[in-house]
Amino acid sequence: MSPELLRVQDLTVEYRGDRRHSSVTALDGVSLAISPGQTLGMVGESGSGKTTLALAILGLVRPTAGQIMFAGHDLTAAGRRARRRLGRDLQVVFQDPYSSLNPARTVSQILSEPLDVHKTLSRQQVRQRIAEMLEQVRLPADSAGQYPAEFSGGQRQRIAIARALMVSPRLVICDEPVSALDLSVQAQILNLLADIQRSLSVSFLLISHDLAVIRYLSTQVVVLYRGQVMESGPTEEICARPSHPYTRALLAAMPSPDPDLAQRNISREPGSAPPSSNEYTPGRSRGAETRHGPNQADGACGCPYSPRCPISVERCRTERPALRAVGTSAHAACHLLPDPLPWSNPGRLAAP
Ligand SMILES: Nc1ncnc2c1ncn2[C@@H]1O[C@H](COP(=O)(O)OP(=O)(O)OP(=O)(O)O)[C@@H](O)[C@H]1O
Ligand SMILES: [Mg+2]
Image (cartoon, rainbow, N blue to C red; front, top):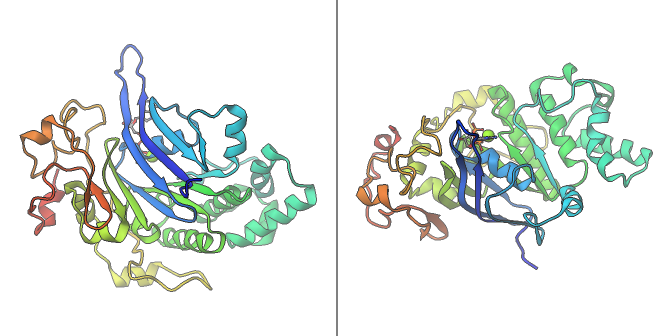
């Protein structure tokens, strides 16, 4: 059996338009893999297809082409029953903890929702499980009887995380789990996710537009631009030696670490591991924002980044570059590799 928990192979998702709107290719031949207990980060600016990938894995949008293998099963070919059974191992935490929790249900009811589907535990066991999960996300035991409106944004995201963990999933997809939260709370939630992964060995697919968030939690990263993988590989290697001009632009857009800000805003959870060298500094790097949509004609046949790339040549506009090995185990899709590139001035690459 494959050691990979999730393998997405050449995945393409097209949203079909109606008569007035043309179709949108949200994902175009995306491949990635996640091992058990690993966190894979997916980074890309707005509209790059991150949520579409999450929805395709969850079976909420139908791929146009490609395959999604999860725990040795082909999700793209799975029927309703098989998907429901596999769905237990596959949970999600969405960006907005205000809309993702039903305001009319108590925390206890919200946390038991995933168990309702599978009905394998007695009432007493469900109560026990709820208490364990509240402790896991460091919420007081009496939260169970309260309603979402009684909690702050960060506390609500803890409830959403607890709900995802109720059925002991093997993979949790976190789609922008901190971008709706105050800066000071972002670090607390990221620290919580790191602690959960250490104690439960669960895999995460962490989706964010912010490379600083990805870098804090993920050992591997996939850089997505307009539905295509620009670069992928070990996070530290890619952050230290980015090969693709778009990755360079994302790095250039990251806020530089500000120790004073970090001191003020980050309070590490009691008992959590000491900060690593890549300590998360709260700050909103929105990446290099763009107005280009995925179905924009410019660069449609070639590299999707070519209209913004400061070093593009004619070939970039006419021929799509394949992912090629760079460095020790990273891959990048750029025609101009491994030729020397003018990397000495990343600021130059940040401008669209
Ligand atoms: N239901 C839909 N119908 C048509 N187009 C869609 C639909 N959902 C998303 N799209 C388009 O697909 C592309 C990818 O969208 P997606 O939401 O996956 O991006 P994203 O990376 O998650 O963006 P964000 O960071 O803003 O959440 C965008 O151009 C979006 O407009
Ligand atoms: Mg999204």
